[in-house]
Length: 400
Image 1: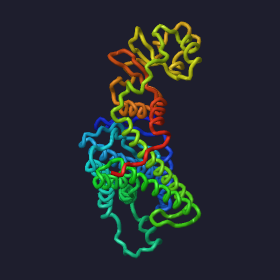
Image 2: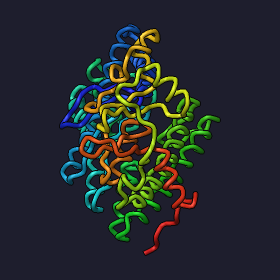
Image 3: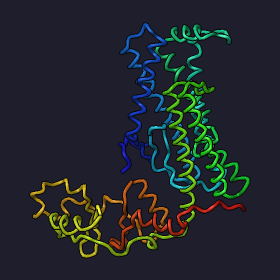
């Protein structure tokens, strides 16, 4: 499985937190604590810390609302969404296939930033009666005094509202796969009637913006003040890291579309291994280790009983039982049963099976037909098939 843990479901969609999110949560809470101490010197450190944790939790709740908005619109256009995951850079909705039209892409992309901005303006509106009115030309000293005069709840509302508005604006940057980049792709798609060409141009612009962010981050690292982003080593490193992520994500998104097009119409039976090692259900764990695991590079073997697929035995399963009990224990005692496994059918589309492999973060998928094991679909075999047809180089986009 992907690294992280699940926290529940909303509208049938899994909610998960990546382990990398813990780092950014702690970093944001620490930075907010320092900011609250600076704004409100009369508060104790514990009070600033407690409020910072609450504000950070609410911030990620607003990110979750942003992603749920994407999910609701995707469902309205009959596009399945399997998971929403909070990670290092915020949140991401695992949309299982590309939109069928530029119109669907446009609405799916726009609803996220609109939701963030709406949350931000709503919170600022609630806070406004408790914020003293100041002259537009207020200087930094007066600004600090203004912040010091706000109560705990108003402080959180002003900070959270401002951050959400900024988040909505930032997501409209036309760098694919940011929401703004998807709006750009929808516009190019509507104009060219070619999704691949639109993705190529949106991805290229996204990579360019990623490189720009990295350069600006390095400039900030050496003391340059960048409008909107500010200056400083920490902010500069963070912006450079975001730029690197955006550049990589843009490139992966385009290549992912090429792979999807290439696998269009290809069935699992064309890619799966029809022959391979299988473990009879009567095999002992000791025999499985010595005769199967130690004599191959495989990390998991399907278990069959008279041809019927009954489960999968992995290296991790071996830790379920003491080594002294291996000789007398059949593999069926520690394997993962078939009814707890995700499988593919031979006539299933290869894109669907590959999506299962990616979502589960596994290397292979049993292929089962009416309860009988007919093959194994391995991630490396799919990659090799794609590489052969690409000639190790991605094709250039169509210019229709």
